[in-house]
Image 1 (spheres, protein in one colour):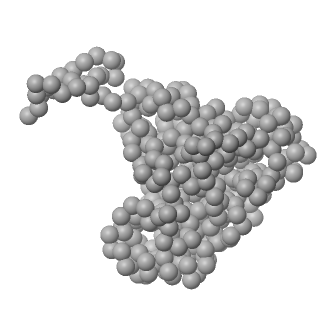
Image 2 (cartoon, helix red, strand yellow):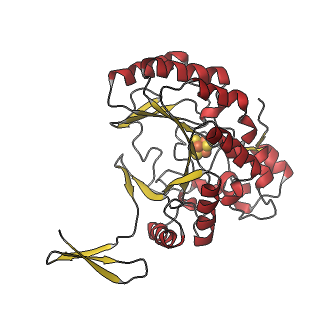
Image 3 (spheres, rainbow, N blue to C red):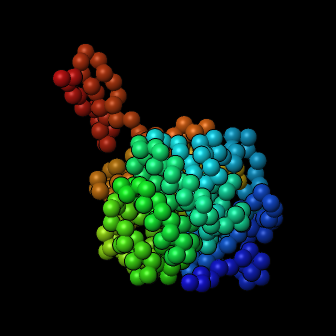
Length: 346
Ligand code: SF4
């Protein structure tokens, strides 16, 4: 399947760019620029601050230097067992199946690896990953990620799943992809039939929808093909300045996801990745949004707000604290309306 994309040179020729966009200079350290025609069609190109545009149009602000940032804040390199296999948590591994994406998000936390033209994982690397997992029986889940997993050909994807499952039949697989919104035509019966063949353990689809407008009818149709095949869909979004850092947008996003059978799973605080400071939201603001969502959303529609701590500290919840004190065997809690309620220590 051919996915139509737009390079930065084409963008410059065809669209009126903002001053920050025009001033962007591609270098060996910058993230590649590529936007799918489908995603471009969702952008309001008249608006320099369009929340979809700022996720994918490059900006000179990516060159801002900030000594709190680096290219690998999550210490993925330290936790790598090979160039493609990351083992940070005892029960799960992440496999970088490719560095290629049809579209590159300017907030990408893995820009040290993404778009470096390494290409898809080799069959030998797949075999090695499968053997490693077999030797570590506490691993129950694998994140098939990248880059974008679904840029692999169907035959490569089939080989990948077959090889991993042959040695590890109970391995739960997360299909991590943004192609359901960036190139939804990639999802068709041929692709879904691959997942349907392997029934010994479940698959889960992990999407990244950051704004309700990304979830157009084509994206919904693409995601629903997975759900109809018995593969639950969960969304991990990133808190992004100018994209979803306001109450109404986050509320609309979570409700729209849930209505379309996609469980809002995580909202991530932006990682301290070089080149992304202009898109990062202040932690106080993220907690304010979390508190407001807890009031507005149902339990099903409410995602967990998370922060992946620097230097490989791992994920912890990012939330307002509702337990105020514990004295004389009494816990004092704060309600969502700011009132106090007591509960005994029993
Ligand atoms: S799709 Fe994922 S891996 Fe690819 S650029 Fe976007 S965030 Fe990074």
